[in-house]
Image 1 (spheres, rainbow, N blue to C red):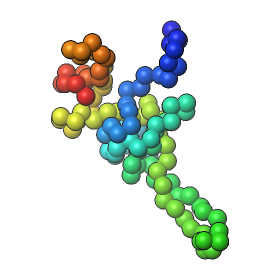
Image 2 (cartoon, rainbow, N blue to C red; image 1 turned 135 degrees about the vertical axis):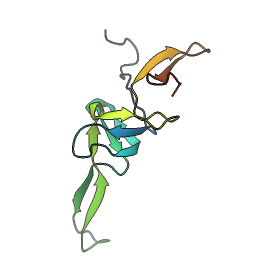
Image 3 (cartoon, one colour; image 1 turned 90 degrees about the vertical axis):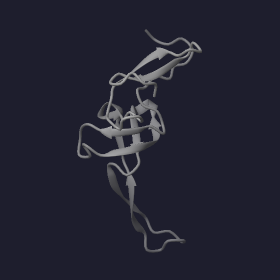
Image 4 (cartoon, rainbow, N blue to C red; image 1 turned 30 degrees about the horizontal axis):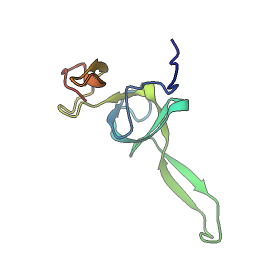
Length: 112
């Protein structure tokens, strides 16, 4: 069912979450999400999936350079790390006492 007003999908991770990579070349690495690209279903994780970017020479930088930066990772290859235990966990949503949906850890049951 398509959402009527807010077309942005609900994701299992958010910017600022600590995640672990569960598939791909960076499997097993942990990092903090710095940016999420919702339309592409990808995220930038600090220190994970490093790529080399070739920067052309400019007037300020006549040499040019090779810049190391983080590449994007598909959201399906990321799993949230529970802040309380430090272990990877799946997430669910349940109503808190104020009547608002909030994420919780399926492993421990604690709110995230």
